[in-house]
Image (cartoon, rainbow, N blue to C red; front, side):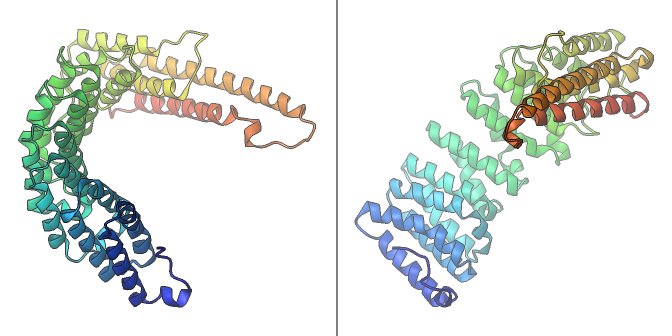
Length: 403
């Protein structure tokens, strides 16, 4: 049964909207599973057409009742509705009543039902994130022995932190314990480590997290995917009170020549937060980091320039320029030479690509061109502009005392 109003007059009538809601509720109670799924799928359409607070609240409370009493097959579709109708969640006026209905399922003996309840709470984090009952319930799920429930708890935690960063204080010890546990799958540990980026605004937690990131990134037993996540989180918490130390920068610089591109980028992005000027740094340490970055900037003459490769170059050249300022090697700047070299190479590639494209277009008998006729120009043009901006950026760093 369609929820679309037959004409514009009836579409304005809240009575008609509530009649449709009652019809959907009746279909949801049907003994035929196909009709139930169809009715649940109609809820987002009805809410989009009639976003009245009273209707929205009534609809979600009915979905909450249905979620509490339905089998898991229907609970899955109800959780999907909460995700598809997030823009209407803020209009719910009886949020606490709705949460009580969901928590009944979360405290059930069925682990799959608990997983689906966690998914629903995650989809509705906008309204549930600040409720202590929801936070405590999620914290308890970390004690489960069911792997799917642990994964769902981690994902829900990440969603909740987006709307309530204070929640991190509640789950802090639990998240760190799971992130440190080698028996936890790497995919789950990565999500946990990345969720800790929400500690950045918290002075105490971000300071404590520094040593954990240092351990995850530098531990020889860590896998590359854990190192990437650790360095990304480490970068997020670097602040004036929590600056990257030179001894850590030296270790991280060892990854800038790694074969894995994601690990190189994470290392370079973290080094981009390092400010060597003003720190007491051993000369041999600076020289070693400088040499690794110089090697990273080396590009064989026959290499293809790409946006991804240029992103690594930009980060490496920027960090190298800061080291050169700290060492007083501005007059013999390798970062400037590398930036100039890449800008010249980008100009050469751009000229060749433009000439080749113009020649091809001149042979087109129709005399018309479209975006599909010049697929190579736009990326190369962006590369040229980026290389010029890099030259300007390096010049600014070398000419300033900021770093």
